[in-house]
Amino acid sequence: MRGCLARTMLACTTAIALAPGVARADSPCARVQASPALEARWLEAVHELERQITLLPASDCQAATLQVEPTDGAARVVAVTPDGRRAERVVRSPGSLVATGLGLVMAIPALPEASPSPSPSAVPATAPPPATSASAQGSGVATPNPTTVLPPRLGLWLGIDAGGRTAIPATVAAGDVSVHGDIVLDHWLFTIAIRDAVVGFAPAQGFDNDAFREVNVALGVGRRFEVGETAFDLILAPAISAMRLEWDFPGDRETAGEDVEFSLNALARVALRLSTTWALTLTLESELVPGNLTASPGAIEIPAGVPAGSSLPPSFPAWMCGLRFGVMGAVL
Image (spheres, rainbow, N blue to C red):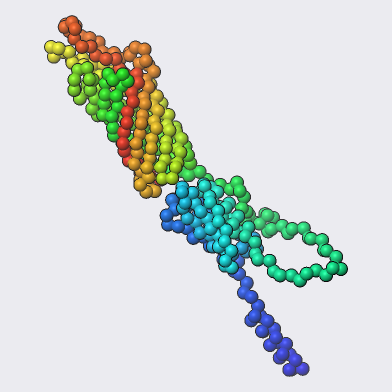
């Protein structure tokens, strides 16, 4: 009797020792390896993918390593299982990375086990209905949904640029400096810009660096288009423009006029990224002043006693175009 009991305990101990280990419930079923060359927006998506993987129960996914690396403005996701199977996907948008990564982890099938051929006389058994995953029964674990997207990207950029502008036709010209702040919400821009003409002249009376002045304050909205490391911004910005035009007449007679008008600025800007937080910019801007299209209400009055044949001052410009170069950096 004692010998039988001892043999039974030895068999149980041996079975326990040879039993396969059970995976820890708190260990993720897959690991994510992100390339250091990824942009910040892709790294945010990688962190969200890691978080979603930790929520998956072991029964819902296969053990694998996900490698995420940049490729031509997109990202390549490569899934490799411990037995050497491999799957690869190219993701065009950071918002689709989570769904693609979870789909790779859950979609790679395990190698089928060999089963004996059924006997000719065996009756085929009816397949049981598919079991419902615990995550689909209200466990709160996210499942790979092709429509899963990340929240819109939010950023704040500040920039400064300098260049020149001229009226069309060329009655006045100016060199100006502009500062701007851009709130970037995914692909939309909300902009505030202040432009100051630090030097200006009227070609008709030669070089006089204080002949023309302008301060322009604009609030605008625009759309950003990204191609690799380059961003193209199209912005429409209503503004208030305050102009001053000074004119010198013979005999040391000098007169000036001021004009404050509503204007409409249209900007086309190219931003070339130097890093994730800095970019060089080239801005082409056109300014339309509707109130000056017919007759400028701020036209300069000609003082009495001006000799006949003297050159007359131009009207305040109704349309100006300019080109500026600058730099901008990310604050948020």
